[in-house]
Amino acid sequence: MKHIVKILTLLVTISALWIGLLQTAIIPRSHTWLLPIYFIVSLGCYGLLLVGVGLVQFPTCPQEAVLLQQDVIEAKEYLKQKGIDVGGCD
Image (tube, rainbow, N blue to C red; front, side, top):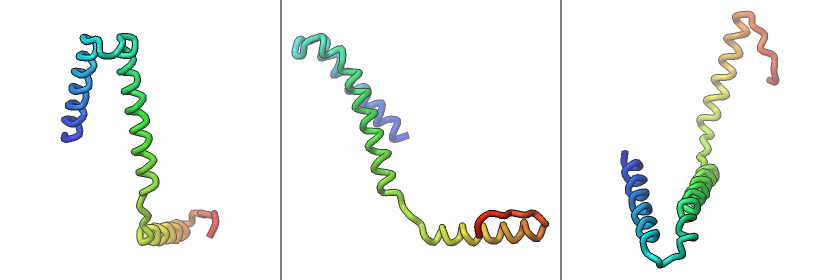
C-alpha cells in the first residue's frame, strides 16, 4: 500500500509540474509535450536498473542447495522402489 501512495504522489506531482509548464512559456511548447514520453522512458530505464541490481545482489543459499540435492536423491530412491526408471545423470 505504501508503494501505491508513493507512486500516486509522484504521478500527481509530475502531472502538476507538466501542466504548469504547459501553461507558462518557460520551456518551448514543442519540448513540453514530449516530457511525458521522456518520463515513461526514464521510468523504464529505472525499472531495468532495479532488475539488474537485484540480479547482481541475488543471494546464494548453499545450505538450501544441499537440502534440495538431498530431496532429489530421496525422490529418485522412492521412484526406484516403485519400479519407475528415472534414468538421467547420477
